[in-house]
Image (cartoon, rainbow, N blue to C red; front, side, top):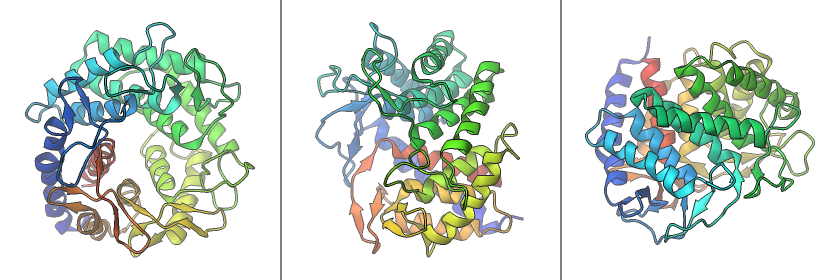
Length: 362
């Protein structure tokens, strides 16, 4: 049985999200002229000077507001974000979506990256589930099609970055975009039957097992196995495990079994006093001890899948070390000192998925 104190702690944490975090991005953190979230706000909740706006950040916020669409103003805000995603980032000439625009709303980085497109799939699947508008499903379908026809390779994997007109830039596959692609596929399958997406998801997971999983400990590497200067991130082990273990389609797969071993190894080598470190070598040596809130949230979410885990105590670590009355601490350094005081618009996505995992646990 879950610790009874967890109910009260989660309720307080969810209230912090509704009353502190969400209003940041409906108010000072939102550029009402362009209809986009600013990249980040400072500790006082004011936007940092604009250098760019990213499609990925817009998509993450679309997910947040569509997931909480019953909250005051959230439905209207989600509709604005969806329109802005199309208006500012869609490439009408070549298809797909630009990576970023500048402060005046002009395309800045015109490349097409898988990370962005994966989040567009993820966000549109969630938004379509709530509104069932044909245009939203049309954008979801377009994103899935461009991923399948432009980014895919012959071995079940996908290029990380392509040129504006889809030129191959030699990026090859990278772990993080592929994980979020799996997440986007799973979100799509949660809202509709879709055999091509199911087939693509299974092929992707088989390819990740073959190309990215280090066999000794089952850890998911950041670059394909055998790449120079490879490393692993504990937070990504926890994130992958949750995605795979909560999918009936992927439970019991070779990748699932690897990730269960990876969780144990990442917890032993990459977590100190309940706090997750950023980067480790394959043999467990710490490369970067920075404590990032997203990794902390993913660890807490993954713990809900571990029998007998002290979930309530771990939630307390998140609340005490990373949340505050004005929002959150994005990073602490290896000694625990706050090293980033800004609050990026992309972080609420991690917090919300964590809280949803906790709610499901209860």
